[in-house]
Structures are given as C-alpha cells and as structure tokens.
Length: 467
Image 1 (cartoon, rainbow, N blue to C red):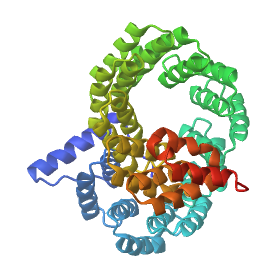
Image 2 (image 1 turned 180 degrees about the horizontal axis):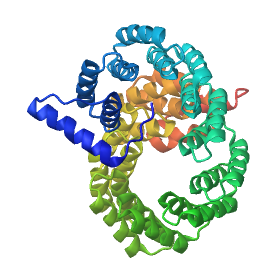
Image 3 (image 1 turned 180 degrees about the vertical axis):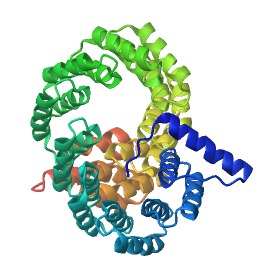
C-alpha cells in the first residue's frame, strides 16, 4: 500500500488524531487519512498507536478493505496467523484481484516456514501488481530462506531491471554471488551495472571488494577511487581504500585515508587502531602507541585495542605491561582463545608457571585443542611436578591427536617417573613405532629416564633388532 500525502496534510491529521486520543473526543477522518496515520505509526514502530488507529478507522469505515489489510498486517506481526488467514479469506471474496491480499497471504506462509507456498502466492500476486519490484524482492527473500541463492539472485536482478537505483537488491545480488563463490560473475555483473549507472558509489565500492576476493589489488584500488569520485563523503570507500593501501605497504597514504574517514564520521576506536597499526609498520613506536591508547580511550570496552597494546609491549620485551593489558582484554572478552594463549605465553616468559598453565587450561576448555596447546600445558605441569595431572592432560590430548609420537614419548617418560615401568615401555614402544627419530623428547624432558640402562637397551634393540 503506497501513501504519499503532503507533509502538511499528514501533520494536521496526526495532530488531530493524537488530540482525539488525549481528550477522548471523537473526530471524523476519511479512510485515506486513517490509512496515512496507520502507515506513519507502522513506519516508526509505534504498533500500539497503529492498532488504535486501525480500531477507530474500522469503527468509522467498517467496509474499508485497506484498513482491514492493516489489521491483517498487525495480526501477522503478533503471530496470530489463523486469525489473519481467516480475515484474508473474507477479503478475498470481496476483492479477488487485490495484490495486497496475496502478499499478506504469502507472508503468513512465510511465517509458518512454508516458503515454497509463499513463493507460489507471491508469483500469483505478480499477475495483479502495478509495480512488481516489491514482490520480486519478497520472492528473492523467500528463496534466501530456502538457501536457493541462484533463484534468489535472479529475482533481485529483476528488481534492478525495474529500478536501477534499488541498492538493497544490489547488495542482495552480491550477497548471493558471494555465497555461491562466484566472485568473477559478481565482477561481470557489477561492470554491467556500472555501465547503466556509472556514478553509483555503491556499485564501485562493491566492485572493489570483489576485486579483493580475486586478489586484483590494483583494480580494487581503482574501484575504490571511483567510489570516492562518485561520492566524496562515502566513508566505506575511504576505509576500504586505506586497507588496500596497507596491503601495498603504502602506510602514509593509508593513514591519510583513515584520517579522512574520521573527519567524515567522527573519531572511533577501530580507525584509531588502524592508524596505530600503520605507524607500527612504519617503525614509529611512539605514534603507534599513542593511537592504540586513543582507541581504548574512545571505547574502553574495545578489547582489540587492549590486546594490540599488550602485543606492542610484549614485542618490546616489557612483559609486565603486556600482562597488565592482556588482562584488560580478557576482562572484556573472556572466551577469546587467542587472548588466553597470549596470556599463557606472557606468563611463561615471566616464569609464572601456575598462571601460564591456568591460561592453557582455559584455552582447552574453550575448545582450542591444537596439539601445541596440549603439549605446552603438559610440559608446564611436568615442570611443576604435577605428573599425574600432566599424564591425564596428554591422555586427553590423545583423544584429539591419536597416534602422535610427541604425546606417546611424554606419557612414557611420566610413567617411568611414576614407577610404572610396564606402561612406560608400552608407550615408549608405541612412540618408537610412530617416529623413532623423536626419541630426543625423552632425552630433553626426562634426562634421568633416558639414561636408565633398561631404557637405553630397549631403544637400541628397537633400532637394531639384529643385535
């Protein structure tokens, strides 16, 4: 339903309607006025006022199909689908060629996850539509719900054919291309689109992003330049161009474009961080740190800023400051495995073994179960003398990394330390079967075990069975 009243008339109607609600006086409105009032409230999300307008409108105009369709829209919004369906059926008997009835009927199917049926009804609505672009878009969305990106893309393309400036459909088309991993097809389409609409900053911007997907860095840079030429206030184009300039190691130019973006949209933590990273690449440590701190001052909850500061100090061998700032990042985002790994590595370098082990344990609990994490934690437990805990750690690791000689050698050494020679030799044999060249693991971690005559003889006999 399309409404385009003059601003003056709409303002008068709204003032009159809201005055009626406050005073309980009953004023008369024609049905068009009610439709405009309802549409206004729906657009700004004031559902309660829209419902009041619908009720009063139907009291004054009980036969108005459009007001009843608004009633249907509210019922669908409130998930009262059976009631909405019943009302639509009665309206269909009155106006079987009303496209809005079909649209709302399809919306009910969509709410019930009956997307195939919704598409069928939307296509029926096309037979009665004066402007089919909205319905084509709705069909495209239903295909997206079905993960049918090929057909969705075709319907969004029809929207573009009907309205070359339908940027929402353009974004959806590119989304479909990306999901289908069709970067070159997306480029071809955008080139065609730009031929029709050469000063469209959105299309140039999207073209640049697609060129990045195909590693065509210089072409991407050119596309972002044209996006800026088309609209010199387009923040996204400046940011994307700055990222490309970073990739090309043109850090001074990147900083310039990040600054322009901030002039346009105001300061923000992300852009401060990017500028700081550029200065870091340029070796300008003071400026780098200055902008990292600007980032967290702008947004104290910006964990990526705190972790950048922590990594800066870590790379400059200031481990205590690195530890202080990584803790700030973890306080904000305590389920980030990379933060906990970094926390563990800092503590390991400071020889804070208990804290380092705690970090590795937390990392594993969060699901980061790489072999290196298991080994790092287990080796620290060995250093701490927690042999049973270390053994259990490596046994758990075997569930994720079976037939791994690094784990087998470690378990073997621990078993010998725990005076379980039978298990020690069993795991030693398994480790030697997998890779006998890595026997140095026992030599490094358990030198006293490696020197035992029985162990030396066992290894020699394995390597030289003829002896």
